[in-house]
Length: 125
Image (tube, rainbow, N blue to C red; front, side, top):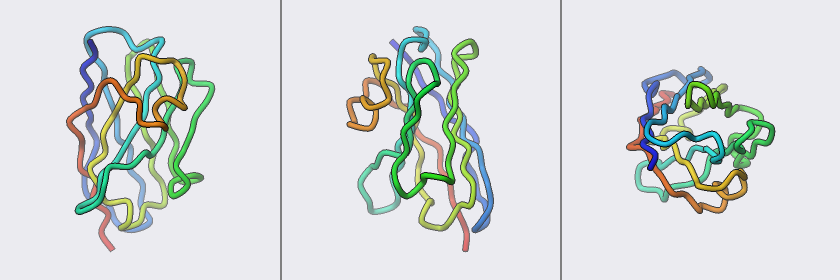
């Protein structure tokens, strides 16, 4: 069993940067893929980014490619999402996720086993 806790959300201006972090407790996450989804007001939840168990392979949704960077530290059981050049369209609740599978494609396909409670990111225009 894995528990995921997000932190780092908040208010940022258009064009700004923010880092959201995820801390895992319970079982280790060494062999598990990790990732992020988001849900904007009135919208469906969507995939944002994923990283494989080793940290060597990452995957991004097209709207964030080139602006967001996902990373992980298995020793600390943490995953971070560095978000640059934020726009109001990035406003959403960001959810940390994990899957009992080492590959990032699992996260992209939505085959997620654990979800955090989410952290709100608001980008003002």
